[in-house]
Image 1: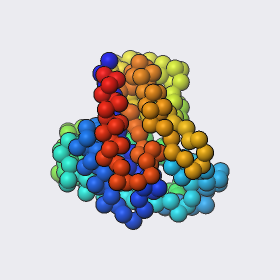
Image 2 (image 1 turned 90 degrees about the vertical axis):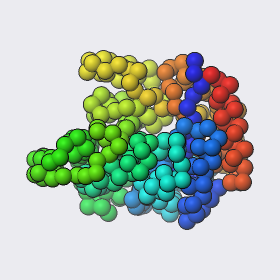
Image 3 (image 1 turned 45 degrees about the vertical axis):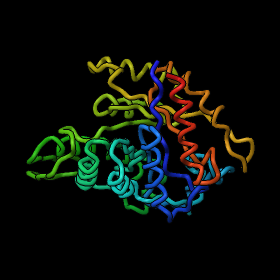
Length: 310
């Protein structure tokens, strides 16, 4: 069994750095590359509203931001602009734009942004288009919340079209254009690599995975039934499950709202995921260290433990 590819989550580390010190994240990406990590990930919001905390703010500030558990003041810098800075100072590490909120952008503008970033990084970009959960965010952007899934489906169709063709014409429900040229195109003819995920393997997610996906990155732990549904849908479409990168994450627990999680205990959850077919494992530094000066030694420790699993 090969060792897992390790992915460092760069967003939501605000117990290690403040939301204005974005160059810290660029530096951490370089450290991740130098110590052997496969990829770095950044998630996004455009704005937050009161519904960001309608379930109460997370107890331990090191925990993951989830629907309704975060302070509306939580920083969410632009992920694609940050990746542009990271791409310029790295050579190998993949750049994973998790939860890129596609329905809040016009697909032609998004294709332009993604294509440019993919070219700068020479094909290292991975995009996870997402519809997200905040009604307040959609209201502020003037986008109908209940239609976000349908909007995303059409956006994916548009982006595939303009990455592959010039001129391109599309007459859809939400977007309409004729004989447009989007140049230069992305690094690969089909555009950047795309992952999809969600809390469950429901119809729309599975359809997007089968049609456009290079990876499955669920929110939380997928059930055997979820994996079976995806496997059967892939087979029905003539695709092999081996084509799909399976993305998991370490399991963690905090003793209380002020303490760190235990790295060894968290990484003990990886072998079971490897046996299920997961190959890429996410980890967030602020769950395990309180001082950014410790980041390099943390990364080396993570990679030493991961390589021992191979």
